[in-house]
Image 1 (tube, one colour):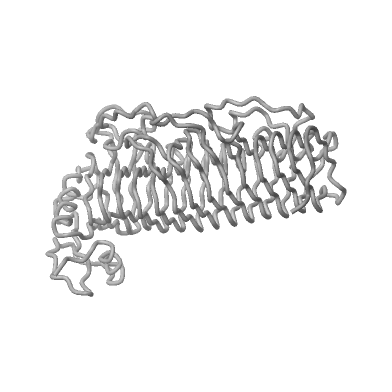
Image 2 (tube, helix red, strand yellow):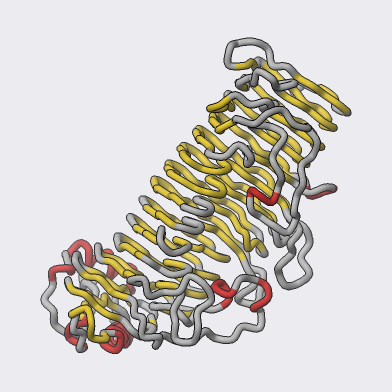
Length: 505
């Protein structure tokens, strides 16, 4: 009879409590419908778990044995496992870290060196090389990291471009099919705690990542069919980022992703982000029940810099505090992708039940499309309530400066609105939403420039004592304000130029 598949075996392992099995090298039993996955303890393959001996060879041997048996669980009992070499993952093998088990990174500079990549110029160095990691695998099926233990780079992984022998990530996987990340903690990951590219069928539950002293949390690149629940990611750079680059020599699709009931923070950068690497298209994303507690760039960021079409993305029940730019969408023209990419699109995006507080007056919530046929289109805000710092005086309502090759919120100059700034955007609707400031501001609440079909339905805006208007509409065809007011209940003051009103359905 065939041996039990790793996915089913892992589920049975949980049922039978295999984290408590004896530390003995397993001999795979003949499979039946109730046969549990065989367990291979790293201690039986020479691991010392003393925090100083190099246990990499023992870990590799246990993985090889589990793979040769047709699949199984490689178990790490409680202890400190120093891993000075890159561990090479294999198909049908799950690494189970028991409570109290920690795998530690090393400063010995004996990890695999970065492989060459002819597509290096299309993305940053860290995205282009995968071998230089604590754990690496390519074209693997049904692999996982589970349990309640920790993998800790221990301050030894590189946050910049590593030299030969240095690792800059904990987990590095390419072209995998069937990945599970459950229960474990990834800490001090260097450039990335986890980097996956070209994968599919990824699930994660109760994953904890702490890279607040390093860089990125989890980068999910050119990957489809992803379900993440109860993640807790505290990063310095991007916390949870969805990207599509050209590192694998092709423009790959992304999508069918659901992230729920998670907590994110990013000290310097973006909490929940699309991009900046955006070669292949993105579609069908659902984010729900997410708490963001800091981001010095975007709380909810979405950029198309390299020709990608981003569509069918939905945010619901999200709370943000202490973010530079609560919501930002931008289409840029960097075009850093193979195959002569054009300019991308952003369309069919919804935000429902969102609250957020910003922490800088310059980076107002922004939708910035490109000209011509590359406007942002079809964005709906339902019950989206933002409070921004305010504190600016009056200023020109003209179009601010923009660096089309830069995706950061600061790439656009100080917005002429304290609240929403909309540029080259069509079919934008606000329902039962509001924008307020913490400190009096001389700018309008909303400025819309060059677009069409802007609708504010039951929209509430705070009024600055020196602001020239509450809503400024410039070269927008078919705008409409319905049942909208300032926070005192008065009518919104609207200033228009080159625009037409249309409140028909």
